[in-house]
Length: 291
Length: 345
Ligand SMILES: Nc1ncnc2c1ncn2[C@@H]1O[C@H](COP(=O)(O)OP(=O)(O)O)[C@@H](O)[C@H]1O
Ligand SMILES: [Mg+2]
Image (cartoon, rainbow over all chains, first blue to last red; front, side):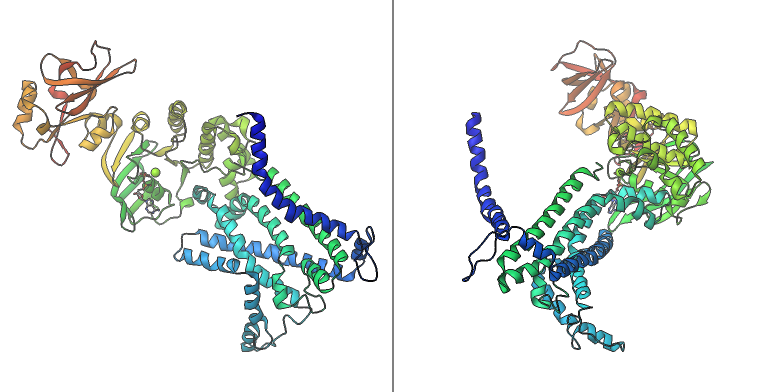
């Protein structure tokens, strides 16, 4: 076959995917960017070029800073805990114990549920007085709390729920990672008198580093992407105490109808996620390959 | 004195009896090979010796004390694994001194031991390399060095050469044997390769389906196998086993015939390929294939649709399809009964 026909064939094969990407990813991204540089159109005033004004007001918007800091707390509160729990669960279900299949299923169930369903379950847990948590506290003689209505407990409550939801998914990655480690390594270290604990820290954990890096970055991305539960649980309240960037964008665009500002927020979030994704490529490709 | 003594050892996994009532002794500073086909329980026995696998029944004695219930690291054994079991994220030095660090050996002593062991196996230049950057033979040496620094007098090896190419395998065979002699180690070595067993062992323990078939020095098993299994497992090509009902007994040499005819318990006769010769009279055969190996020639012959081998150090002028006769000396013939056991004539 001639080179030119091969080239044409290649382009033809590439075109459908390219059209989809352009139409639904690149084109909207670029329009969003331009929208953030213009004011909103209204009956009274036409659209005008406003440059970085939207970005300036973003950085001086206390609510923006609040949702950003909330998001960072969410990441900080969920990622190390869910990774820790995920590793622990993976170590447990990697052992040849009876009922292993059932246990794997049980650990993974929260991950299979849609976020909205998870939120509904936890709404019942957190409900004041009649909720599961308050009921249990009552038995031991403790005061109940309006977990989702109190600004000081709402974010931690969301964090706990997110950990519950995500740990199962990360467990699957760690389980896959553990299964690539030859059981002879454990036998060899056992024979040398190494304790289980020492084997974990000296051998298993370092060998799981690529998995950890992958999970770390995905968990970080998830903490910005997952907001479905806010619609059911708190709507970002009370007083934005549980509001997150993506939910704030939704509110700004579709409740407050401030397209220009919502676009600026979107571009900010996109830039943040893009940087993280780049870091992922950089680290995962360059580091921690042993074999 | 025996370094290891095993009595009535058994191991079952559910319905599978992997090892059945096995007893043997390993003399101190000897090289003992557990030999047998795949799945016969060799690795299971080795793992029970090391303490990595539980014993179903029986006792294990190492260095004069009963270690049956003692944990792996306290038995005074080191092990070389089939896959070498090197830690991929640690360099050669860290791999070798892993156990020393666990046992909190002081730094100076550690450095000294690692340097010595590295010198013994010729790894001094490669201490900073990761296992991924080593050849198969070099990885094998790291595993040996790790076993050497542990200072245990008993070393267990599970098919340590099976991942190497044949040339390297022959080299490492000599090296391991040499190392064992120099360091005065007691080695228990698992393999399914009879060539390895024959060339390395002081003592071979031949296994089949979890049971011991025969124990003895290589030449002992070769020269006086106690069963059809022993006779055929050792030697290449294997010993020819001829069922008396399938051959023309009347054409045999008269002395051979009278022996075969005198005992009704004989079911098979066995003759090694190097003991069969072409002759004027005897069993009529047709030449089916000829393999020249330079130093020897192996003929595949057929007699009444039964194949067997003849080995010749010279290269006789014989061609495919030739019809000839073969015979052998009475002294070179083995007799087996209906249970495939050797009959002493
Ligand atoms: N962990 C195990 N669970 C169940 N069966 C096993 C296990 N380990 C070994 N076996 C069985 O025991 C028998 C002997 O195995 P093994 O000692 O590995 O044989 P070899 O090393 O001689 O090839 C085999 O039939 C094998 O399937
Ligand atoms: Mg084996």
